[in-house]
Length: 138
Image: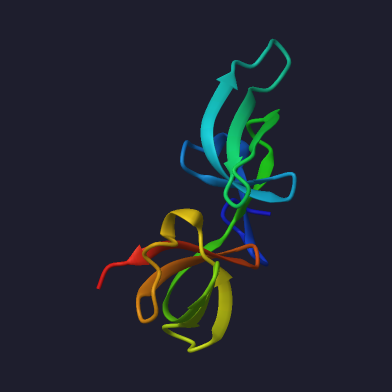
């Protein structure tokens, strides 16, 4: 596979190309890279890279150590807008602004006070999972 090549909802990249803020899949979980450390190659070896990342959905810290030239998976994150149709407890029924598809999303704790009927929200589709990320200003 070539760098940047897409397969399904993932694209391939080299471990050495990962920078702070990049997205990577570690242990089948989409994560945001928080730190990278590269060790120098030995006499007959290859440079190794230690990638520290935090899960986008579960906020758990994960690490990956591999040769810098190895291929790693990076999730394709689709960022979409939607309008809130109704709110029921911790769940909002929303309609996608482009496809007009309606579905329910959990409201994150930090947005519960602000998500009301009729407002616009930004949501992400990460490896098939839809997550509400922020309120969209009009």
